[in-house]
Picture 1 (cartoon, rainbow, N blue to C red):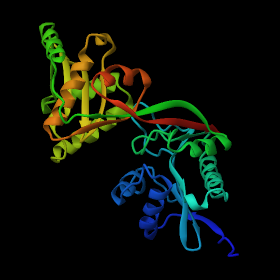
Picture 2 (tube, helix red, strand yellow; picture 1 turned 90 degrees about the vertical axis):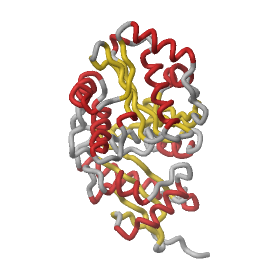
Picture 3 (cartoon, rainbow, N blue to C red; picture 1 turned 60 degrees about the horizontal axis):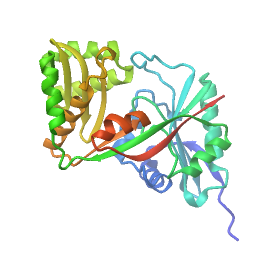
Picture 4 (cartoon, rainbow, N blue to C red; picture 1 turned 135 degrees about the vertical axis):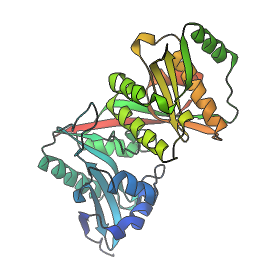
Length: 318
């Protein structure tokens, strides 16, 4: 019998990138990533430390990995979340599971967070560079069970949804509602660069901080020609912004409407206009990475979105 090679838990090195990507694809078959994503969402993250990405190696091959972050740059309206640490991805080679590799990686992560005075570990809603909001409850049920056995609990659920928009049109109900709103002084149109200061203030006043930062990144990309004005749609009441919806390529959302104006169909028109613009741009599908049951059954469902994945968003108190 050939002895099992000893497993070493160590820091990621630059030459590990391609083997890590291959391992990632085997360990998380629905969530493989590219070199660009590895660099953009992990290695170039403003909060990345050398200890933020560790790997398990055995016999010269990578057999496991885990990514972990604490915030070093405050998130708008959120701050540094000084009590919380984030695991954004974790995987073990399917052929090496049950050998304690995942447990060793988690133990290293807990040490990382304790050394930085974190009291809570979450999987995996790290802004801005999370991959998925949590652990896929259907496709990675064994992963959910593994984490539960190590003291993690599901504290909320995130739903992923997709819609086929290849033949999406603005139906009569949407156009009628848009006309009715116009008669009430509410205009629906795409973003214009003159809207910049008022749009950012609207987001700061009414939307979650990460959405403000997301919009700011997109608007910076607009100045480089990598984003389009018509990727953001606005609702205005006598010139004052009261709602918005956006897309990034085929990623749909986020969207929001001021509480004072909800229940009037404004959100439905914004979403429909955004999806129609996506179709005009040549996209055949739209996807939402993270929403809730109410929205999926409501406004998203009415626009053709269907449940794709169900995520357990998990945490552990140290």
